[in-house]
Image (cartoon, one colour):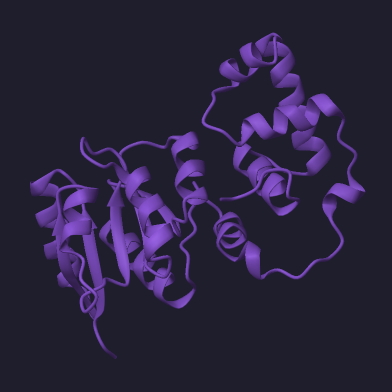
Amino acid sequence: MKDISLAIVDDHKLFRDGLAELINGFCNYQVIIEADNGQDFINQLSAGQLPEIVLLDINMKQMDGFETAAWLKEHYPDIKILALSMYENENAIIRMLRLGARGYVLKDIRKQELEQALSSLVTKGFYYTELVTGKLIHALNTLHEEKPGPSLKELVSLNQRETEFLKLACTELTYKDIADKMCLSIHTIDGYRDALFEKLSVKSRVGLVVYAIKNKIVLVD
């Protein structure tokens, strides 16, 4: 089996160097690019040396993970992105997945789980954790391949305000921001959220996003 090539894009050199050394110690993996930020990564890319996987930090001062993921989605959509973050930020998870990331892991991930994540990206095309379900990643990355079929939207009736809330829930706005935008109290917004959880049989904001995307209520760019 040939080595799987990787890039690490992270502006903390000590962390990046340690991660590269760790991954190079895994069987069949080789880090071929280390970059300080998205622009540095782009500058290092060449037609003959494209990584199959990029471990992409989200918070970088110059061309952050969101901007880099958007660029990769447009220019090299086959490169698999594994997002790295220090925080369990729901909005960041949703945004990165909409930009094409195949997985999202925290930087305090154990060695064994990191190796499992890389293996899953290679064999399945995505990596699921308790933070992000494989169903969501699969839906975001194969939506264009799905054949038309019965829509859940046809089975579940949403009123205008529920639909408006659902669309806003697919953005980076907090629930308080959504309440302000809809001119409602946060208590009322919590009621919309809980009602949709029950009506759509989902358990989280991520589940709402899955429903909205699969039923074309929100379109993925």
